[in-house]
Length: 415
Image (tube, rainbow, N blue to C red; front, side, top):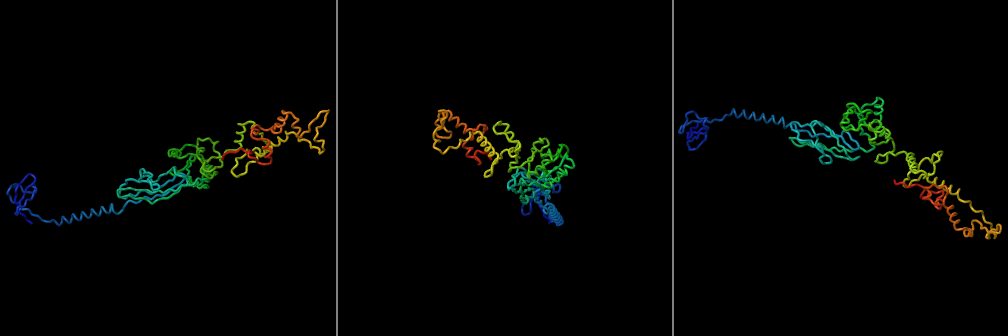
């Protein structure tokens, strides 16, 4: 197509061209021939380039396919969360490597029971995490949330529960410097209680067992703040049937404090020897209790604390019977039996003086007032009664409680 235009004005950058129907067209001056001025007529040819259009369309479609194959076919994968190990107060979670495809990572967060627990540091390198400070035998739900430039992806929810105090299967031990025999025995004990032994110090290592504090494994355990204990700790857990505190089983702990005993409830306190307790109490109160016969094995044991509704110890009753026997031995002999004759009511004449018969009503009136008080004291207070018992026990209570257990037969100890 050939078009004739008249040059109306020429500037340095733009020329104004006029059509035959008086239309203005701005045209670049650099495309006009040299020597053009106002009033010149130029011919401009306009044609469609089909070959160039086909090449451009083909290049555009190739670019679209390359973008689709690169970014549209494979998308990031949701993370897969698993439980690696569980103890009474902690859980170790792990997941597969993060597959981002062609997207870029923004963040990886861990959620516990629907609430955000925290962000995972270095998510492209870290593949596990440990959650501590959990409740014993409690159920928790976890899931991961992956945020990328291609969208947000969430893992399936993982429900797990912490162990009971009597469940020892969560114990994971890494052994350090140990004799071969002790190491073999340690492995047998772990097999019996359901624990396991690993060769390296990992995030799921619960305890580091060794006899000496040296070596690279020991250094790594100290760096990761893992409890370093002696093999006796595992034996104590097997003996008690539950998790035992590690304070008395550290390498620098006193070996005398490592005692195996009965555990009451969840307090994990071992009961001490009752013999040492009674010996300390007797040393603190000299003369407060009668001496214990060494030949009698029952007397060597101190009284046990009575439980509600249970039977009390037999030692307080034996002590009361012993006091009763001493009172009966020191009491004056009973008066002789009276005669049924009428002469028993009359006083006996001895050397012209009237003497009252013991045991009669007139005898109390004939005796002086001071003698009556002495006689009552002798009849009510035992001579050889211990000082601690004489303050709380009277003659009437001893006589009434003979052969039975009275309320003061044992020292009441709060449970």
